[in-house]
Image (cartoon, rainbow, N blue to C red; front, side, top):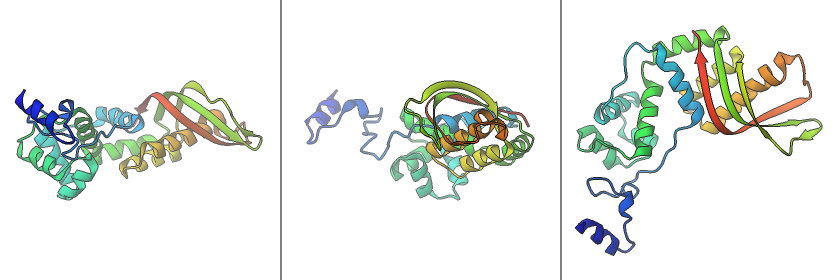
Length: 223
């Protein structure tokens, strides 16, 4: 209670709701909310069934794994997680075991993305080459064509295999750390070709499909 009152008396005052158990202000300590994208998360979730070992569970082990996956660079881990240098050092030492929710979600997402890359890539590439990557999503779709753009994009639920080209592009972009918006564009382009144009069988004048407001997205990787 004492440190709460002391924090409120500071100029500017410290918001106790932002403070962790050890009394450190997470935002002032450099931690930022870094939401995990739905498409990236969906790809990582779909790949879990092909892995042969479980990823590390404790915060210390997970951050240590990320350090190794980033060529031993603490600075790169800081950038990836959106936290301070001090926080990363405390995670590595085990002095801080319970990161704030958004940071914990980012740690988990990065570990899943980097865990057993050879096993995962082998299955994903085989699935992409054989048309075994299926996307199911409920999102808002808008269209543009030579006649103009839609004024009222609407929600649709679609389940559709992606072409080998778009599936491979999606995997490569995710591995390279592409933004969620970039992943949305790739999924939209894949669905434009495979679903809305039926592989070139119709809607020749359709120029672009835009995907926004993703309610959910799931992937079925059949390698």
